Length: 266
Image 1 (tube, one colour):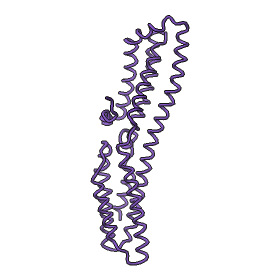
Image 2 (cartoon, one colour):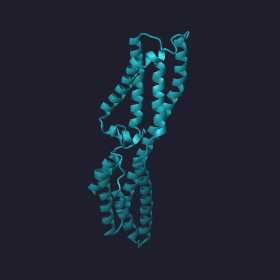
Image 3 (cartoon, rainbow, N blue to C red):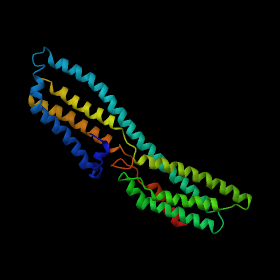
Image 4 (cartoon, one colour):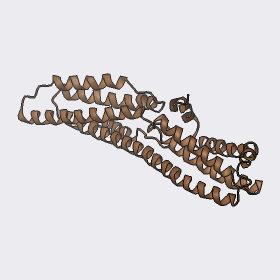
């Protein structure tokens, strides 16, 4: 049975080469079918009057629905990437605000919390992000986040100013946890298998209808090859955006890298 996760090893292939493989697979399928399957399909329509007009009408109707489907799925995949990128930015911003808040804490709480936040950021950049890029949810970050939480709860404000700073730090920590959970959820989020079934089956139907045209064989190969190549590029684009942290169109750890550099400056 086809499962999208069984094809995730394709993300390990360089993007340019992977795009070429998608295009070659679709064009190769079209050309091979034009040689082997087209003569069989042509038997059903070769005696039909105005065959090309009928096939062209059917193809145009089919392409309207299939084109809308591919467009909507591509937009959905890109929106998933954009939403995940926004969550990553919000997480880094909340972590930065939290770091600034705990810097106002008296010793030794301020120093300990800053160290814990630097350690979390360093772990996420060096170890957590590479795991996400392989489709694995990093678990050790939870331990570090819990250590920060425990240290925050251990602090007892003694002045009204400390109470204000502590309340703001707890609020930023909750924002940070919310964005972090959303990021971890995005690591394994992907288009459902049913969408891939419909997209692949639709591409096969599209190609099969093109085989029904009555034209010179060389013209069939050239025009059909162009259509198949574009279908391959669209499939590659959707596959590349299928998971936010994998592929060429993926989210980087740049917001956390900038934050970590600023943490080390202090």
